[in-house]
Image 1 (tube, helix red, strand yellow):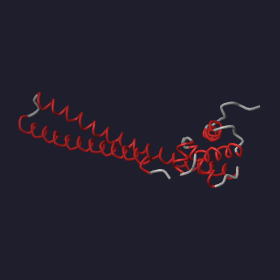
Image 2 (cartoon, rainbow, N blue to C red):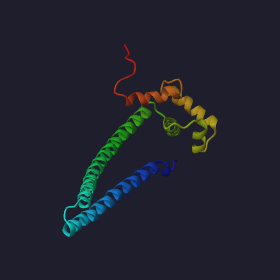
Image 3 (cartoon, rainbow, N blue to C red):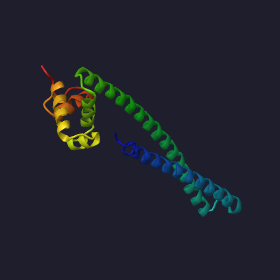
Image 4 (cartoon, rainbow, N blue to C red):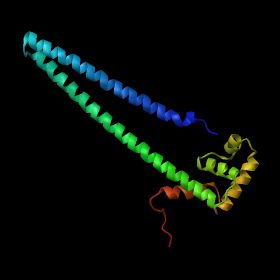
Length: 174
């Protein structure tokens, strides 16, 4: 129904950024090793003069930057994996909620498709095009969905599911 290209594009950009970050940290590490070797060679040849001291301080700063960059990269990777895991869990729970509601409302297969596309933000003409049906058919199916779900329109229908994502209802009933 929908191309995976839309969903994988952000993941591809994230992998590319991660690759670039790891590449830069590795490049800095190689540079730090080069400058450390240069400082040692200068120290052996001419001792601890002002130039050697300056190179030693700059090399130490570069080494500390590499260490910090590596630690932060690892931390970011751990947090990213944890966030992806939480998103998968939430997505699965949301999918279960959607399926339960659709079952409770006894939506037909076509109504389920239209309802899901509505939840994903598609409008009537887009849904009709994606499903290869007339807009009138989609409008009729939406009317049936709204009746079965006891909602008055798209906004109220979508809000039923958004409310489930919130910890507490926006308005306390009582």
